[in-house]
Image (cartoon, rainbow, N blue to C red; front, side):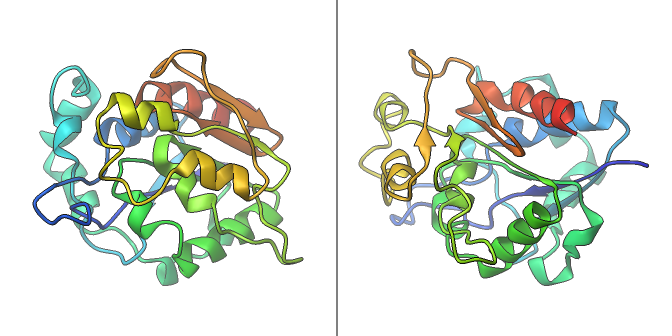
Length: 227
């Protein structure tokens, strides 16, 4: 049977300072989408509120703007997918084998407290599906509780954008919290690469996470291998 993937993207277009734009880190979506497409998987895109997912301007510049991202932006049908994302209440979790949380700093604002995303994640996990994220996408897992009240990430190995990478990217003064620290405070067994922006993927059973934008393709391939 054809596997089905649910991608999660942000609706937020700026930091707390409205003059500082952010949004979806496009290549984190396109790299994974391409990997899953090659497998013949069905794919759908959801966001916390549905509708438009703005793009992070920094992701549209060298060296982050690669051929998959360029091809996506040049394709009207693909851009329409980001203009008209589904909202959580339109999603039946039983329709999906895996959920994949994309990143970009914007997700720090609207992923953690989305009850709709938490519901979908919990249901996919408890149905035996895969929960995955790349980069800041793990912010969407911080507050997700299972039916027994425990946090999904507690006592599980994962990775995600490191605080050291926030500093290197010079956004440590803009972000609303330290995601690495927040994951550890919730009992996650956080891991990171020795060098900032090196590819790093952590697989803990059905939890598959990647550290940063360069890890997106490897993260998607890891999801395929677990599926």
